[in-house]
Length: 218
Image 1: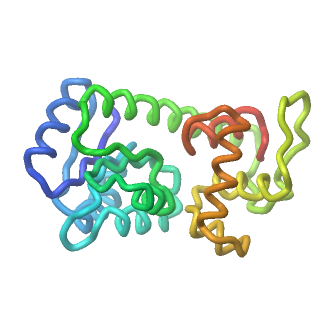
Image 2: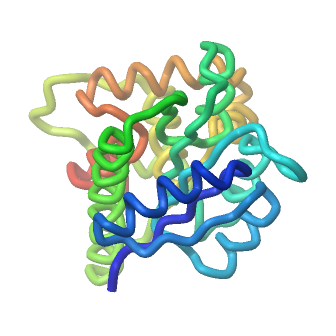
């Protein structure tokens, strides 16, 4: 069965353009005209990835992603923000809400397609690793003590980086991690940036996949 992508945007032209392109690429596409409808469709259809605008009626994109991340089943759902709001502070807010990627409008459909393929590949890999760990009788843990000894890695993680990494693998947003570790979301973002740099990964999905593949967490 084709993977399902949810496109949430209040502009009909944008929804149609993205839907046509993705359907031609072999995906199954569902659409929503605002954040509240998007949240309902996430719960009903359980898509494999979501592309969403930020400025929308009833519920904006930030609120939508935060609401999605509150559901344990959707904490690792890949999310792309596609929006005209591309100032630095707005991008930071987007990542703090739990988005994996932030693409500014106007955009190229080919770039969006490449980003979607990348995130879906990482997401499928993470799910495969998780299923494998269950089959082997392993169970995820929720504390920093879940960090296993790392051998022959060309980098060292601090205790705080290890704690942040564990929480990332459980799908927590920057705000949620900061609340548990008593850090500001901006400080958490700095730790996430350090982890991306040390592991040479490009986004949170890749980072989580890397951590699980190399048994940095259990």
